[in-house]
Length: 185
Ligand SMILES: [Zn+2]
Image (cartoon, rainbow, N blue to C red; front, side, top):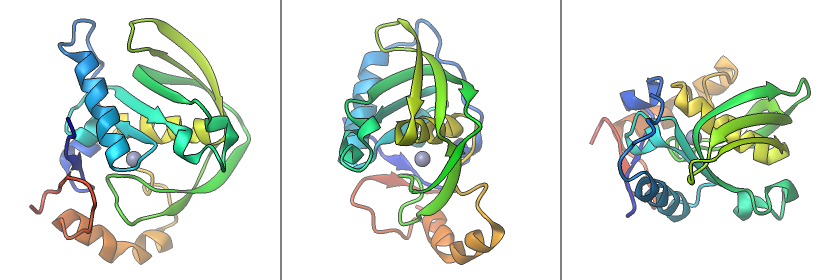
C-alpha cells in the first residue's frame, strides 16, 4: 500500500522517533508499505516519520543511483532501530534531496564512511560498514529519526534562497507525483 509522504512543516518530522518495540504488530507489512511508497515516489530512502509514524525504522535502496555510485549496487536494506556508531573523519559534500522537501536540492557535507548497527527485518542484529553515497543515504535517513532534515545545516543564505519553496511546501502548494500530507492541506 502506498502511504502519503508527510511534508516539511509537519510536526512529526521534528520529533525524536521512538524505538521500534520487539512485538511491534505488522512490522513486515509496514516495511513492505514503506518500500512501495519509496519506489513509487522514486526515492532511495524513507524514514518512518515521513509516513507519519514516530518509529526508528528506515528503508533504503540505492540501486537507482548505482550507475553514478557503484557502492549503492544491491544496497537494499530495512533498518530497525539503526544507530550509526562510527563516522569517518573524511567528509564529502554532495547534493541531496528529500521526499519530504520536494523540489529542494542542496549540497550537504557528510562522513564518507560509517558503521551502522541495526536489527534487520528478520530480527537479526547487523553491524555494517557503508561508504560513499550508501553511507550518505543512511545518514540522511537516520537524521529523520532525530527530528532533523537535510537543510537544517545548510548556510543561512541558501535557506533564504529556498524560503519561498519552503513556504509552498508547508502550505501544500507543491507539484508532487506522489501522495503527500502537508499541514496546509
Ligand atoms: Zn529525507
